[in-house]
Length: 204
Image (cartoon, rainbow, N blue to C red; front, side, top):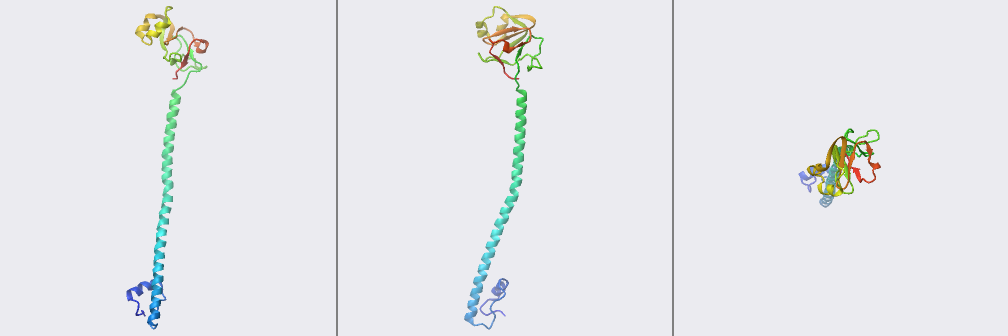
């Protein structure tokens, strides 16, 4: 029986929260106090339930973020790893293309040009002078005239149409020159053997 102090719709709602509601036969004041207590308890239970649901929702969201985070990190790591691998490949390619002669050889035109090593004796064609900072010009089957001097190369390098005035054709020879030094070479020669030259391999 619904106590007279509790509306029917409220009693039905409260009965779900607490089955021991005051019955008829209790005094009006006592029933009113009980109703107030039950309403207070019901409200507290409702607030606790709401707060619990909110906390559970927040926890669910946090859990979802935690589970989603590794996927994002994995993709990012894979992308980073891919970029790193790509960069490594590029660096390896560049390093593969940038090699220096060791030792550095000069030679006549019969010896092919390329990267010189102890096992592959090739004449370096990427020479640079560290004294004048000019790249060495090379002319196959030519030799320098004996009248060449420092001022000639100083004034005419690296223009071939000016330099050819002092070039003499000679099969098998190679004429080398920068702005401060020049050589005619016919045999394979280690550059270190000529202490006057400041030439180095400029890398291939």
